Length: 112
Image 1 (tube, rainbow, N blue to C red):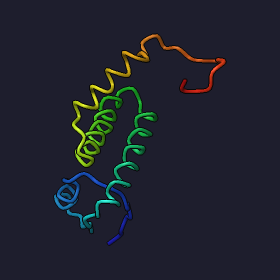
Image 2 (cartoon, helix red, strand yellow):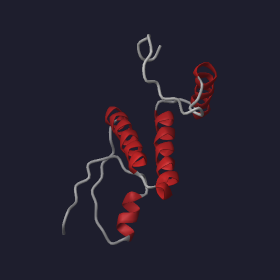
Image 3 (cartoon, rainbow, N blue to C red):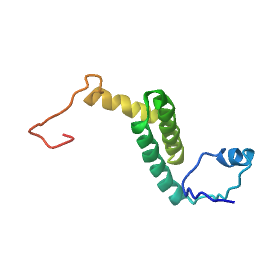
Image 4 (cartoon, rainbow, N blue to C red):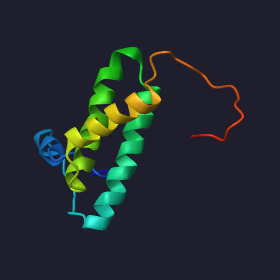
């Protein structure tokens, strides 16, 4: 049997899918600190996949990003609607991205 080492956070039903396809696997349950680290890594992984996705895959990749975001909220006991409220607050204060503005230079440092 050939083994493919992944060493990463996976979705809950992946072992079941592997078994259904006649495969074998090994998993373990992570401790809290490791899980936090792996969730953050997963967010970056999914964001990179979105950036590299073809137009027909964008919706699916955004769904993956959203799943990780909701898992992060759950883990850190942050209500997702509170994140949405923060998003609205920031949009009201600083705007969104509808105008597609690209800042070439300013007399102030970044983020000010």
